[in-house]
View 1: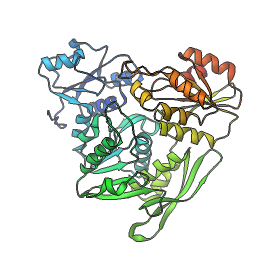
View 2: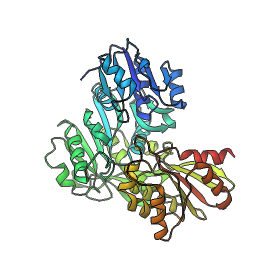
View 3: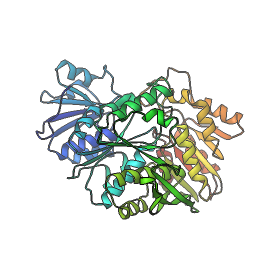
View 4: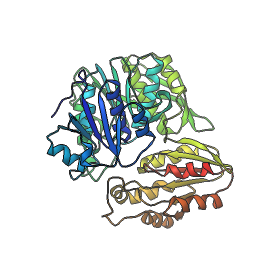
Length: 463
């Protein structure tokens, strides 16, 4: 494998530079003086921002985009060997790196390299930890899978020896990392187009935790099944967090306000005694955000952050974009957007919404990928039943083609069988018209999914 010397800037090309993680890595390299180019299928705010920073951006992927002076090419899991730029780089003998391999090499440059993993919650936990570290003056370098107001985007380049990133399990990309500290938020069935089953997923997370050196530690949720079996024999220290009072870090005296936001006492049981560190109040709703805050707090304590910075960072945290994000109000209807694309995430988002005040709850759901839709048909129907009304858009294909004979109509049928008021409207234009003629003042509308369903709410707000 080609190894980049980060102290000797060179010319790096990114295939798919507009992705949230790829763009972050490109920006880090730009800050380190590298020459950066990249391609994507369409222009976006992200590609325009990179252009303003000095990157050369090409729209469309063609072999001629690979200049002879390129020293290495970085690509994502969505790029296949028939991609013209991939083929051109291979033909020219230019070294190739996956996004994860580049990120792993970057992590090697930091004494404190924190990798936040889990089937869901990674972006929120990484964002919470970011705000805590900033309040503590730790000056971290950050790569987060969402847009965060406190750092003005999805990446921050600091001058300290602390690096924080998300660690995604898909295609085992996190096994290319070099963490000194790892967080495992949860382990659930997902990405079944790659993994065989839950045991295969658990095996990958175990391999990920084994990457942590003996003087490092893993912060892990006490809600993960067969936790002792999963962590037995790890050379590093294992720190548990969650709702169980026997865990090292747990929440006591949990109270939810009328907006569904939790306040709790962060408790540390180090040495066998319940030691209250102080009271924390969140301004993001739901039990899932409480768990993410516990994980971020546990990581912060282990990184030596004093409690006042933890409390202030979490108190001021208002969420990453597309994580139960309040987009605005139109005709008396509250518009929320959420990235949820797994049944557990849908349940969590709808449960958070149920703690808020509204007349009726509407959910516009866009399934993400055919393989995930087929694997979780029943799960999606069960989770979406938590809404009063469901509107289903067509599946967002992402990296896939329709070869599985599954569609959003299958979820619609299952919802109808459960007695849920469900509507299948393939296009966003149809959905927007239906909302304006059907939703009532006082209703809450959540656009939900990892594709482009966010534009439904944004179009409504534009009028």
